[in-house]
Image 1 (tube, rainbow, N blue to C red):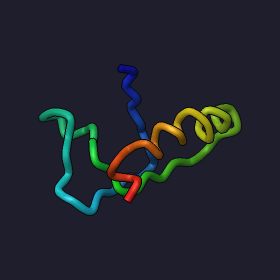
Image 2: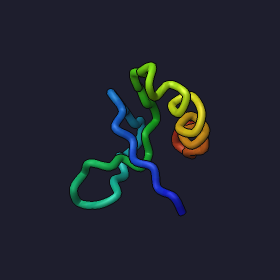
Image 3: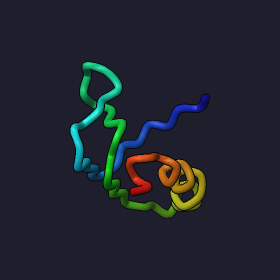
Length: 61
């Protein structure tokens, strides 16, 4: 399984936050993700990353 880590500008959840571990730096159930696109990463951001983000159950509500 390929894992994706996102460093979004902003994320939020409307439920009890679920984290990967005790570090509390990897939110598993984001409800909102905000990212700023750059010209150099736009193709990937609107392609692979977008498809992956749309598959997250918390974002499909």
